[in-house]
Image (cartoon, rainbow, N blue to C red; front, side, top):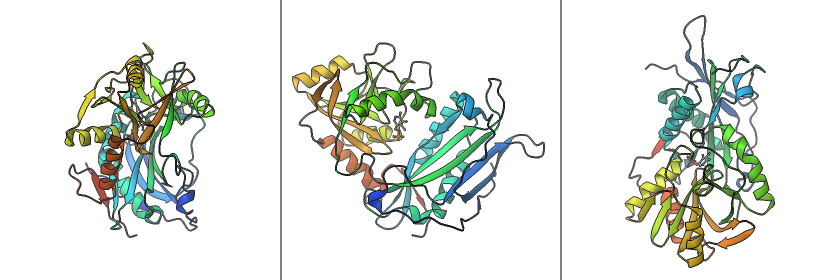
Length: 364
Ligand SMILES: *Cc1c(COP(=O)(O)O)cnc(C)c1O
């Protein structure tokens, strides 16, 4: 398929990049954004067109746009890492594209072809090169977003779409010093039900989760651990991360059954664990089994996996107001190993045995 090349319009006024310690997560946006339209031009059939990088600014959207009423929205999250050698690498962008495609299928949207997806990301990173940090542990977070833009209030899928990419320099997700996190087992609210949209990275799932997250935060937890919507018994995932448990000498994570977000980091963790010869079980894990393991002392480690925080060790689980400590309450050896393996590949410190990274030509 032939695609148009990305047109670049540079910002005449550029922002001052804040010092790395003030990055936070998704607080500062870079000077540009990348846009791509799906619509009809001059009466021709609808197609993807006009890929462009333009100065960062507000979007022009009809107040009747589908995204604003019926929630046709998908997003992705991936990072561009600047290695010690200055090379910028994207981590498994094709996986993000695949997830966008399956989300689009579920939400009756159109996703851009892989070539456009990759071209938009690389062109954007090239233009925003100075925003891609050199400081250890920092990266340039990319947020590809797809929305239905057609103005029409009858309930049906939008026929026009906008795909855009914005970027933000980020530090570590949970802030400095907080190595491990406390997670609240959520027993009242649920995130996603079988047959629903839990596997799609769509704002609707987050809208459903905000209240639980807010209450958990107020009680001193970083995020919630979701249980399944039917039995309220099986572990699903953590707020913005997939989750792993080391019980005895086995590392357990729930299967992707449509209610869990298929994380790129989750997939990478499974491959790394396998290559390390560690025992992995992808199977349903009941809360009772987890609490029993904690009581009997066989629960060694709990950690979340996601692009934002990479690997996030959990030191305790809150259940009905009680705190259950995990292992010795410190980051365990498996999460430590995984974090190192992942970041070594992402920053180009070691060979990339799976071909996960995509280098972006960019002058520092
Ligand atoms: C994005 C996301 C994850 C993690 O996915 P990664 O591709 O590893 O970043 C996990 N759970 C939810 C709900 C998410 O939105």
